[in-house]
Image 1 (cartoon, rainbow over the protein chains, first blue to last red):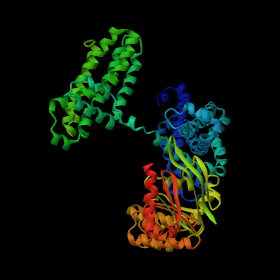
Image 2 (cartoon, each protein chain N blue to C red):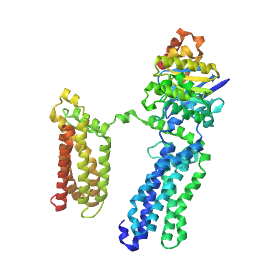
Image 3 (cartoon, rainbow over the protein chains, first blue to last red):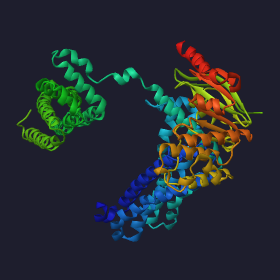
Image 4 (tube, chains in turn green, cyan):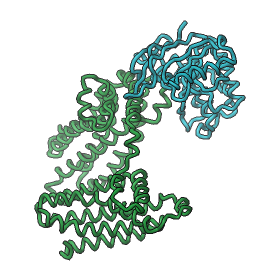
Length: 405
Length: 234
């Protein structure tokens, strides 16, 4: 709310804030209406019974409104500092947010019921097939429905924002436009209950089809394949059983960490994709933090290791530790590779080498630290975090002072 | 008079065929058992019959109403207990039945609670119930308004023997009163005791449709093993 300190920026500031809060409330209510109407836990309870669907929809609106009242109330509390700039400033922000909330609530129901119709519409099948990604085609309309409700709500919020600007500039008729999201929502909802019965029941069939399609897609071969398992054959025979065990354990129990490493690597790629002289330093700071974070997987693996089995079978400690360290180091490559490639493309091999060597050293150190922390199980997290933070700080200091790279 | 009609029902999930060309009917006043091995397609058939699943082909009618074309009206005519019944955990069984009676417009709550043996626990929250008691509550919710058609998916599983006997007697009485009852089960003894007819499914197809009195007590198990065994060996 820094705009309060700039008298000439108050109108722009409050409208910008109000629109953002309105869209937030709108999105939240669009999702809430989806849960209440389509994917709610009450659907399987009520499904065997006949329902007065128009009455049910009217009841759900009241209930979702009551349950979602925290949003406009929260905004009203959050915006309280605006009161010091004048009641009209405060009420503008709260009014815009309330409009977004109302539009999300009232438009959410018709949009989600419309999505059921759209999902089954042969004319739209081609479009949904194009935009469905990895999801079953029938699910695409349901996935995009909250976005559609948000877009429709944004139209109303946009008109309300225009009205608020006019109102704050002295044209009092503009204030009427603050009601636009409510009017649009009321019109959309007014048309809904009488048309709700068929899509309400069809939603059950649609969800069963979507769930069935997802279940049928489960490929046992795919479920068995493990990230990097192909690489085991390049290692000594004595190490292979432990590497295989760790790779399977990591992929099957903690897949989010492994894919998360690549996700963070892509985040580090953004600053690396530049010709700026400090690109490598900025990328290294992000990648170093990501390595420190993902390296904690070593401790998580230790916690989920079968303790009793390990005690009973007593595998040799060195190959076991080596395999765990190698597994962690391999997982950490997801963080290192994307920014390295970006630097190689933008600034050449030398810059990439200067970037990758300290990062690989850090990855190796963190892999060892993570593997040791895993041996300590629950007690290993705190020491690991201390070591990882120090190592990251060391890399940061080195990169900033030029001592590294 | 045919009250449940299944004609050429097919359900596919991608390449997997769950049921294929399933046709049978249930008359008013008849109690029919749907039996089959695990994964035979019993639940899929019942879900299609109750509008929980879109058939890939075929047609299902309940009391003359097409379940897909008029889902609300069809639901007014049948009571259904799914394989995994869902209930409001924060209601008591009596309150749950009051809700169902409110929705369906009629019902005798005390008599239904007694029929499933839940009268002494009717005022406890459903979340405190055992698995068997939850099933009794679901049965009561399906039966309370005395629907024309009752469709039960493994609904007697988990009931204690006295409750199971009571429910079986009640189902028999409902059928004799003119209702059509379709019950899926694995328990052949139940079929022999209460069913008028048995429809046998194997690998998604109907492999037998006989009157229980024609088969005789000894014959049901033999028929089950031979028809289903043959189908599984193929």
